[in-house]
Image (cartoon, rainbow, N blue to C red; front, side):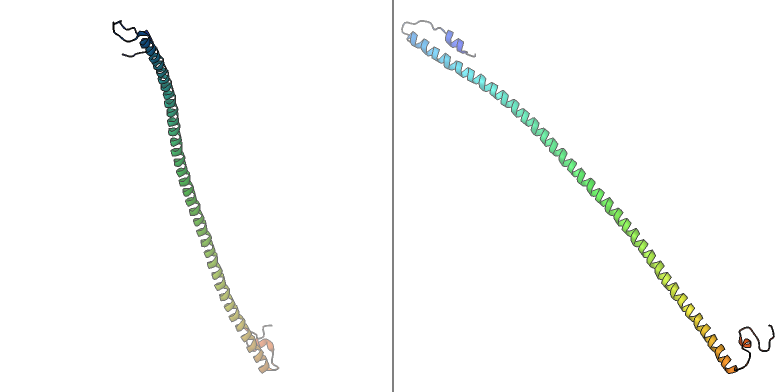
Length: 168
């Protein structure tokens, strides 16, 4: 059974011949009722304050959960961004390596063409030198023949003409 301050104030005791002093008992009951009323008010106040604090704690926990979820989401987003950047860097590096390989291959092919051109020019030079040497030799022989012949007709010494021929 719950006792209220009103119960204490309205409580009446039976009379006995040798009982307690009635005024003293009533004064004490009044004092107890006031103290009890103060305690009930304080208890209610503390309950209300406890409920407010529970609500605040619940709100803080909700915020904490939201912050944790946000943190997890941010970490995942960060990892995804990092992975995407890594993949993008790998792709860019791969493309750069392929382009570098193409450049190297192009340069190598150009180098081979230049080397082939140099070899061809050397071959042509050797051929030209041989032809020039042959021409100079034949002219030297022709000049020597002119010197040896002295007064003879120089037309007879031309290549493709026979001595004593009268073609012309």
